[in-house]
Each structure stands twice: as C-alpha cells, then as structure tokens.
Image (tube, rainbow, N blue to C red):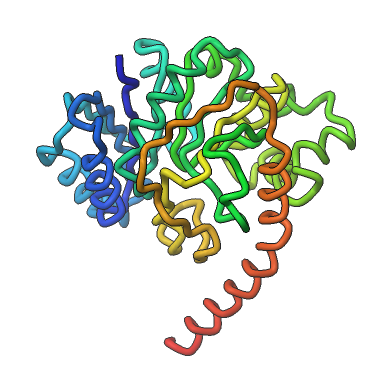
Length: 300
C-alpha cells in the first residue's frame, strides 16, 4: 500500500502549479492518493490569489484520487500542518508531506515509499527527509544516511512517530541543559535554539521546530538521501517563511535510490558535512541578502 500524499497550499498559484506538475511526473503518482489542504485568505488582499490556487488544484491532475479540503478561514501553516497530517495519518498510518513550493524528482515518491516500508518497524527512525543540503564533496557520503535534524522540505513519517509529536514547546525544553542545546543546534552551527526562543516569545509559530524537538527528545533519527529528492522553489521572498536566497539550491536526483543503511546510527561523515554547510553558509546568506537589498534600492 503506497503512502498517501498531503499537500498544503495557500496563495502562490505559480509555485502551486510547479509543485503539482513535478509531483504528477513522479513514477508512482498515478497510484497515489493525494490530499490537498487549501488555507483560507488572511485578509481581503489574499482572496484573489487563494482563489487562483483553488482553481489550479481543481484541475484534472493525474493521481489515483484527489481529496481537497478548503479552509473557510485562515488557519496558518502550523495549525494546518498539524491538523492535516494528524487526520491523514490516523486513517492511513503513514504519510508523505509537501508544501506548495517544493519541486520533486520523478523518483521522490519511490524513495519515500521504499524508505517508509524499509524502516516501518524501526522505532528510532522517525522521519524520512526528501531534501538534502548542497554539501561539499557529496559523493563521499553513502546514498542514504541518518542525521538528527528533522527537515520540513518534503518529508514522510509513520503514525508511531507522529504520535510522539508534542506541540508544547515548554514541556519539550524544560529539562534542556547547555550540552543539549549544543547538540540540538549541531554544535552551535545552526540557529535551531534561536527558533525555540522566538517561538516561546511569540515571534514565530513553527510546527517544524516542535517536530524536530519531539524527535530530538526521543533520540530519533531522520533518513536523508545523498542526492536531494526535493528542491525548494519558494526562497524567492514569496512565502510566509522564506528567504530570498539560492544557497539551498540543489540538483534533483535523476535515479532511484537502492541503498538504505542497516545500522540505525547517525552517520559521522554526513554530520560533519552538514555541520560544515551550516557554519559556512551564514556569511553567504548575509552577503547575498545585502546584495538583494541593494538591487531593490536601485530599482526603486
């Protein structure tokens, strides 16, 4: 039984079309159930774009069956994802999750389904990530490997893992010590703890940081592909939680994944490669961000 797909969309018609067009080209698309959750407009300015998206998702896309849920009000991404994933997974025991700005390799659904089947009974494996960072020397890594960080750019999981999702960030972090914060932040190279503090302060409303915390607390692991199955096309300033930058741009996988690790342990080489990426792409982010601001000022 193939895992159902749930796609969350809002107000970006061009991105939504690209996401669906790529997903439809997947080898297993015609045999897969697709659930589409369309969030309601936040204000009057969003109505037209939301309606355009809703027109696109009603087109005759080639999947086994498409179920559409149109929200009558704006739920926001966090509540949408938590509610949508929970409902689908309660019925189907497993799920593949996408948002409206993710372009997939034709082999993405094959990878997700193979991995979901392979690790269905492995309690420590809690997520399958479709995205892989553009690290240096990727060919030094195995075709797939385990890493601690949950990724929200195309992912899959099982009911047994999602049942351990805890939305209460205070409960999740009450016992954190300095070493836990450092381990959670990959030796302090990524701003995951900053996201925790921003969520506590009400500055962000992220489901993803709470999902990663839930996995971290369980000492869970996430399977990653060496060649990314997902490309984020939303880092162009159009999304609610996107940055204008191409530092995360990758080449999509052009072949089926055949290797899956037997040992359920974090891969040390992958850990170091991703840590290096986290540590050394920050300067690039600042530099690219400044260049973008300068370009905008010149155009205005």
